[in-house]
Image 1 (cartoon, protein in one colour):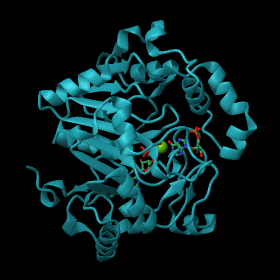
Image 2: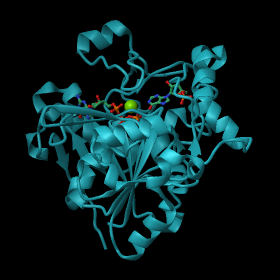
Image 3: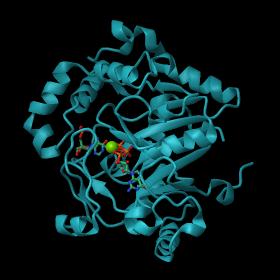
Image 4: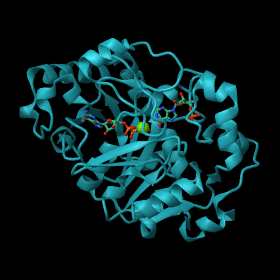
Length: 340
Ligand code: GTP
Ligand code: IMP
Ligand code: MG
């Protein structure tokens, strides 16, 4: 299996957390490493009726046997990291690259107070944009200078590459989604960095020759939080009628909801270099499939959707999520992929 990158294909909140957790239990990686921007992310994992939300710790934490690393490219808020590591009881497994840039109180204040960031863009107020700007100005603190982080400091890139050298599996976890990439998204209504698979690999320090699989995660009804164009957005009434409303993990804001967008999905899969697609929310398309684990249990409506979507995107749909719970998924990877 080698290195599997998991990234968001729409505007974030596609359900990467759940997909990472599933792939972790299935593939038993030695390391799950987080790329992406920083604590603006909110990944949700639901297991056995318990719901976890993580912003800094990789969402694969639920799989107990992996090191949980944060790549050098990621912005670290030490308060968020320490509180999550403590609450989830994973302190002994967490490593932070010593080169990570640090989010300070002043970054959070600017993010919340600057009208352009907080209102025009609708940022998450977590300090990521201002910290990324300071990092580009080369004025940020690095993780190695923060006393509270000293027990966690590591060379994430070296750990990951050594694990790959030893033929172990590694998952690289992205955050946010293609539509809010600083490079490829709906500028200026975007986050403060690229969000595509190549960026996630760079964040963690893995070269392009070492990536085995790139899984792009889509949801049946894309969502967007914050300002910016959303071509397939539906009205609040329509979303209410379909009973598919959603609220943000980090900010609690109501997510704007849209119809499946095959054109965006295809473009996103292309730039991410997707080798597989994971799709979440099949139960939102047809509640009768909730909890299904076998392809045969899916309804005609869902199968037709999958066939058309797969044809439009041109990449195998291998992971079919049928509910928020970890076990609510159909995993077709063995069937659909030929591994050397
Ligand atoms: P970011 O990194 O912040 O972009 O988040 P994310 O991609 O990890 O997604 P997030 O957890 O913010 O949002 C996804 C939501 O959908 C969560 O509430 C999940 O529990 C839920 N979810 C995931 N898969 C499914 C599914 O198949 N069906 C339903 N109904 N909900 C799902
Ligand atoms: P920032 O990343 O906090 O600067 O926010 C910039 C834009 O990206 C805003 O529209 C946010 O709502 C959006 N955004 C940032 N992180 C996430 C996420 O994890 N999920 C969805 N949208 C996000
Ligand atoms: Mg989220």
